[in-house]
Image 1 (spheres, rainbow, N blue to C red):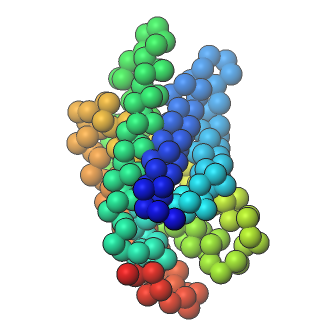
Image 2: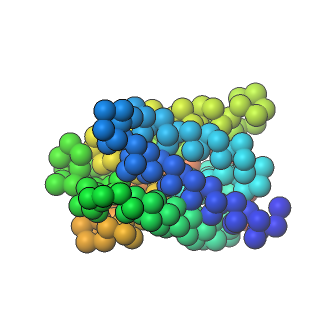
Length: 238
């Protein structure tokens, strides 16, 4: 597949993840009397990946996440030379998704970015007031397991053909159920970047953690999974 088409798919896919996942938090979670709550937001993030995996998995692999791309490259599943282009495309998609969400959300009476706009944060900006250390550990561990599931579900048809998006989407739902109270859950630098562009201030000052921790967790998974499975790590390293 031509690189331009792959990058276009990553832009659209990451747009959908941020718009759908963060949109569920900003637009639907707090809707009076029928808000979808933590469970609904968690499910929404999982559904964005599940649906888009079927839509663009055959085009770009449906990474939608710089940490996933880097983790797959670490595991030897993705060419290192293509990583930067994918990461840039994902960041563009994340910002465009957040921008579209901002345009829609700002049309409501009383809208304010002071509510956080689904940004990720720690300390005073953690939903549960969790410390920076707690946030760092949570993001590393949860990204590790997300990437571990991705690697297992896509390893030589261990999951029946066409079914891999289901455990991957469910894994993302599960880790949101665990991590939303800690950081609003990132495990995805592009997802964190999008809303932070519009909130600025504290969101930008804390953004580093939501790049460093997910990438670290994904890289660890990219080393651990091949070691456990016996998969060679050099097959896509060029």
